[in-house]
Image (cartoon, rainbow, N blue to C red; front, side, top):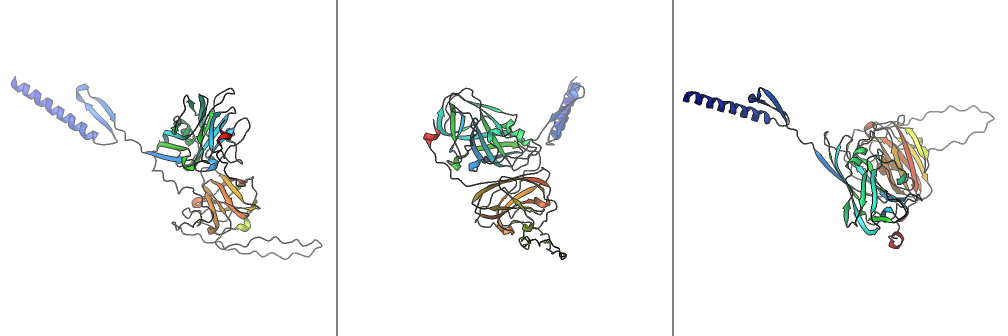
Amino acid sequence: MKVRRTLLIAGFIFLSITLILTFSARWANAGADVLVQNSFAHGEEYTLTNTPSLPTYEITRRVMHSEDDTSAQEDTGKNLVQWNVLRMGQSPTSYVNGLRFRDVSIPQSATILQATLSLPYADWLNGLPVVLSINAEDADTSYAFADSRPLVSDRPTTSAVADWTFFEEPSGWFDAPDLTTVVQEVIDRPGWQAGSDLSVIIHNEATGTSKHYLDVLAYDLDPANAAILTITYEYTGATPTPRPTNTPTPPGAATPTQTLTPTSSPTPTQTPTSTPLATATASPTPTPTVTPSPTPGGLAIELAEPADCGQVYSGNTEGWPAIVNIYTSCRSDWLESGPEAIYHLQLNDAYEVSAQLYHDSDIDLDLFLLDGPAPTDCLYAGESTIDNALVAEGDYYLVVDGYQGSSGAYMLDVACSIQQLPVGYLPLMLHE
């Protein structure tokens, strides 16, 4: 009897140790499914999944320009882009607000975990509740709220929306409701690319004619206290490494040190084609057209097409020469080895020049503004936009070039405006 009991105990201990060792060995294989064989349950198998967490990233963007935030009156169509405050609500006209955040470097396939809009209160409120809703502009990239652009109230918005109601006065910095689904809808657009610009749009949802509004600080009053958008997201691909950000280089700034030394393509030799002498006829001899002389190693500005402010141009970089690879005074770290489509812009006064470039997502075209043909004549550069480039009277060249040899069709929207000084902060005018 004692022998049988001893054998049963020994057998039980042996079986327990075997199960523990099997479970431990398989569980040690991190990231894989663990299979546990339960011999006490008629051979049933149970799978425990050990799923590793996905990489999480966070970016923070602030409104960075006077024309990146605005309030628009829906009934009058006025674009109050230079106000020192953003009025949210109705007083009694209904307001729509736009906040544009540049270079949102989130890949298209990312999963948004949280999106928070933070605003600074301007210490002025009239009437409660203030009833609002928040969308985003439903676009692959958003452009500035300049007068030459579509009014914020006319722009398409996402179907995702966050409701926002103020039942009491805020103080200091405060956050809007979570915008995860709103931002996710934009990131999921087929044409979205990391580094595109994203605009949040706030609508008044109150009815009637009563005054229910509050003011927040705008960029024009204090750039350091402009609105902030913080986004946390998961991404299963390679670590996002967007190419260097689009930072305009103003005229007169020091030329950055060239950090990329690509193998330059041979410079095409300009070989003049001899023109046969015309046979003398009774027709008058036409006056020859004088074109600029080619600059060795520079843009073929003699081929430039004329451009005017307020016009939209369709074109294709294929068929244009590929001469300039590096725009040394703008973006010495961008390899622009594709062909260059060139537009000649002749200005008779000092202007702020803006340009917006549209193209399919499978090609990579960039935009440059120069005051001459040489790579060192570059004044501003942008991946899809050049905003408010302040230039004097003279001749300028807008160039559509291909990053790392890219080429293809595009649309180019050119706008010019005379620079205006920001309106002073006038509480008696803004606060009713």
